[in-house]
Amino acid sequence: MAQKKVRVAIIGVGNCASALVQGVQFYKNAKKDDVIPGIMHPQLADYHIKDIEFTLGIDVNATKVGKDLSEAIFAEPNNTYKFADVPNLNVPVVRGIDRKSVV
Image (cartoon, rainbow, N blue to C red; front, side, top):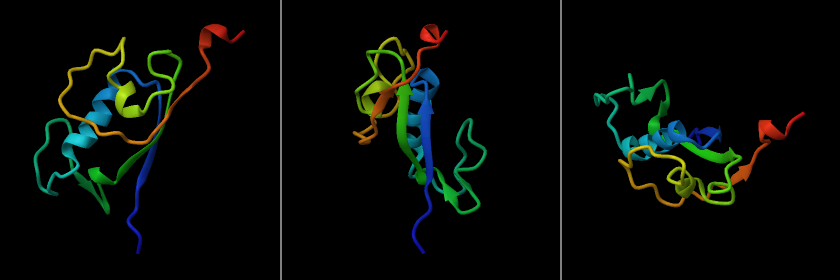
């Protein structure tokens, strides 16, 4: 049987998204019984942290749009502490609808 993935698209590549993407990278090799602050279980049923696969980022900020998610999470105005190196994910960040331009 093929390995299952949890595919995740992120709307708003801000500080919370930065922490999430970094956290998945940081804890992807955690053991099933590891105690991780803020995470109840590294594995839930058949899914492990490493099974999270980011597929798309959506944002309105020009500093993030057009970049790979791995770069956009560190682009200004984000200011989340960098605690993990995130390799290129080959996940595009595309422009979303800016609510200011919606009538």
